[in-house]
Length: 312
Image (cartoon, rainbow, N blue to C red; front, top):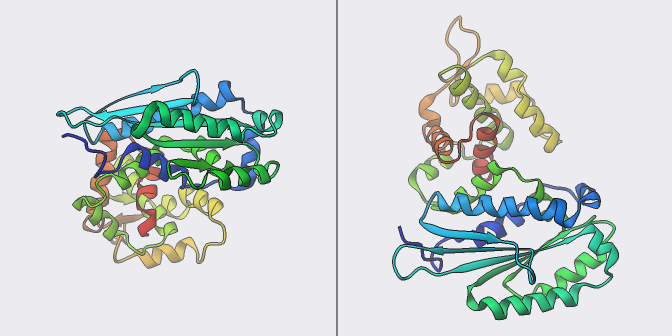
């Protein structure tokens, strides 16, 4: 399959979506205070870039490489379609500013603007995005962060990741990167639309309960049944409640509400069974992710939740 970046989702669009997909809070950015530019930040974001391109490569025929150039940017992602003469090379430049750099340099904005101009001159129209990751403590450098964002906002090729967004990307696991990528690529695929329809309006906590029970049944019990104990003491739901406090209702109420559509009981049997027809497309997504990314267990639950949560 040839890849024409003008009419399809590109790796740059996926990276921009991930940057705009923050789960972190401003206070989480205190974690940046002890992270070093070369030792900690560059290797981690290099791995994120690698994951984005490798996820994309599982859907379409591209060639890519990732470099650590001597100047202009910390990381450059280059990619192009390979089938036919119409392949177009594109690149993403990533610049990282650490807490130490905020502390030691009171005004590096002119340097950043000069780097952007240099990259635009060197790469021309192939430069699709310049992503600036501000990896500092949000509260300590709030005014400078806002000033940088305001100054660069007019350039539509520039994406500024403020500290809480940068931390989200730094801490993001592979399952979330894969799920966000898949949600954008071929989003109108029939099976994916069916999966979203199957869980539409269920609510995020009930979605987490359903997915964790589904994966438990398939992987640990060889079917679509789970024990009462697994349902009523569900660690995934407990983690969800810690991340999203203030949810309405209780777990028993969720189970009762889901009986008849997703769950049912057989007489004299301990536990619940899942109606296979109610989740057939979700099950297809699970097996696709297992083959495509080798996601199983907790990773599979996290992948499916990230993929489906917007429709729940």
